[in-house]
Length: 306
Image 1 (cartoon, rainbow, N blue to C red):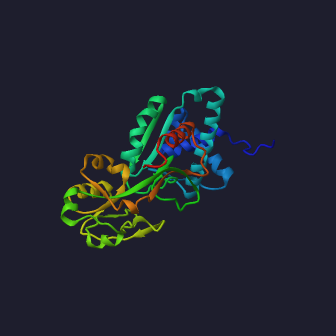
Image 2: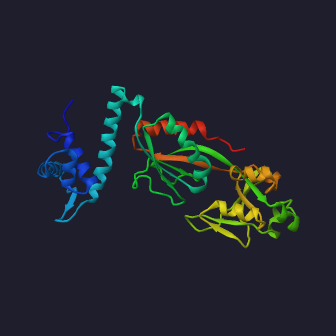
Image 3: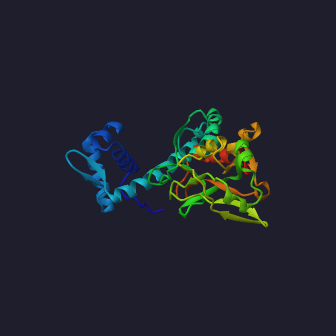
């Protein structure tokens, strides 16, 4: 097989990654146990071979060019693949180790994902988690997340979506509210009720309520004096306090329903659900801890929350 890399050693690529991470040749040199001059020479050889500038250097700072950013992304992936193969060949993967960077939406994260992490970590004690919990859609690639959970299918064809759960939707209200305003019996009755709204963080638009009608799923936009942003649980608390009707995920209201603090309405029009999926980059080789965690979630999260 012909040598593609010529005289450039993989060590030079490792030094490039170190320099990018440390933000200086001196920091990379200290991490690698060599002189800053040796790092500088290695980077000069690498740039000469590629024919592009990887760094913008000043007396005070070192930053990557756009080409450097692209090269860093692929170098990290390539070195990660080599490391995974070596660990697998030497048997070290019997004890997977590493950090999993995970982003989850607030509600689903608290209710579904976060409670599952300790059991996985007890099984693989050398695995660590770096977790973002929030409703901002992180950039999985640019922000270097291994996995993200989202409630809607991705528009990015560069992402792989593994279905986690079809989360059942219910409409609930407090007994006091229903005593005062009456229980809706049909979808047309919703116009006479306070319907608590949730606004999508990404667009600021009201979320449509989903119902089954004549055997088909239909989306309805309702109205009311309360609208909530960011936290789905805010609508649940308003409903418990008697503010109105609210459509939410069944798994979030199972306990107040069981205690009688909330009552499900429009049951004949139920049966709709929204999907939650686990996403990762299509062109990224996943580390063994990440692969194990994907399998764990797919085996542990219920496929249908009914």
